[in-house]
Length: 117
Ligand code: SF4
Image (tube, rainbow, N blue to C red; front, top):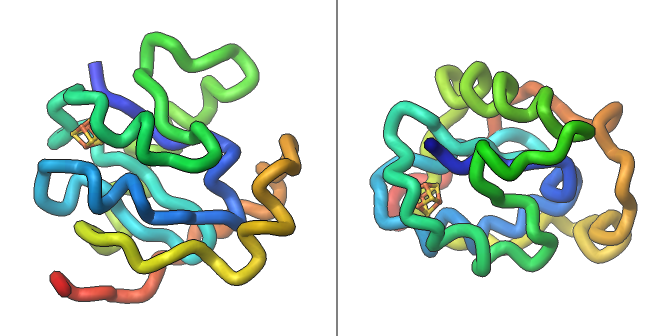
């Protein structure tokens, strides 16, 4: 059962999770969001405590209000570039970290290619 990234990540995108994850390119970077590739996630749980806004959670613990994020992670993971390190949050993270409803702000555009180092 893979982990997924849910709504708190939108417009924050801290990226600490990518550094904590032991699997190469399991995290994928979008313009203002990240997702986990369910095909490669090994369910280790390392990302969960790494996220400052508690956006990473196991698929079987996703609350009803965030169920759409299960399919969203799987779909966007196919198109977005992998990320394996912490590149810091988005500039507006502090402003958006406590906002609960941000789904309409989610961009499906891929993030920048950050390379391996
Ligand atoms: Fe990576 Fe482990 Fe989180 Fe899956 S559960 S995304 S393998 S850190």
